[in-house]
Length: 168
Image (cartoon, rainbow, N blue to C red; front, side):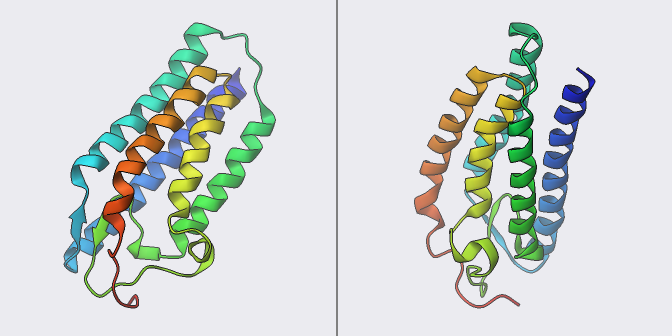
């Protein structure tokens, strides 16, 4: 049981670290003239991710606390955290959770960005399915990836043409 609590706090801490890095980079980009896009939709995604963790806790603690700890799912989540780290390190200060447009900056074509336009979002979507499986939160694993995908589909068309020139 202690391992489950530690794992939940670890995953939550990684999320808080992502938010911290994003806020720091957002401040840096706005100082250089970046403009925020999709403000309203970001708010809904942020709320969805908060409800995601609350849903896992609720399902894990109140619905069926006898479920076993899924080590394979934990391994997959750790691999995905490493993948997210790669997605954050490649653009460096240009990476944020929000969509910011900085005139004169081109879409990154290195690392995972060579293969997928938005690798961080793809990994997040997969994590929304796998993280609940660690805790046996099967209802959360079915609902939240679909809700996230729905919100992301609404966002995707607005992202085209955001970057124009090579990064600094």
